[in-house]
Length: 140
Image (cartoon, rainbow, N blue to C red; front, side, top):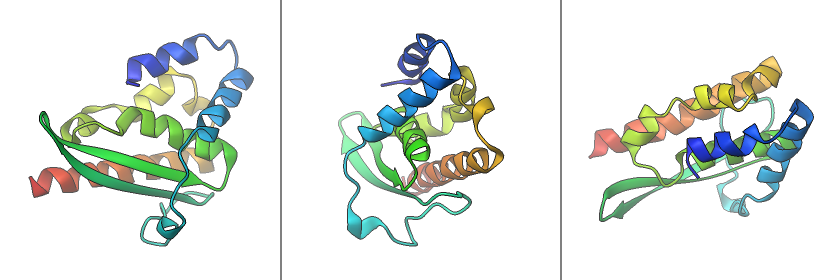
């Protein structure tokens, strides 16, 4: 799912409560996160809830892509992780760096409804994802 698809999905939802429920539902659909990866190395600092992100570089005929996995111990944050992964997982490092992730969150009406702590956590998750992309670009 790309940013346009995600935005289109959220446009059908009339109010914040519906969007909130949709985010939680997306979080419930995340694949199971490996217990062995729930460690300090993979934990995203700056989040009030516990959040873990891992990445895996894959070579495709079109070039390198990064596949991400993530999880959180909080329902809404797990949903935010799911939205993030829809935007970046399976994309090239260059595409990830060029994506205005926080802009998409503004467009779908989520950023303005997050508590300051969740907004800070979201920015921390985005920075972690961009760090993975920068490392992949530097290694190329």
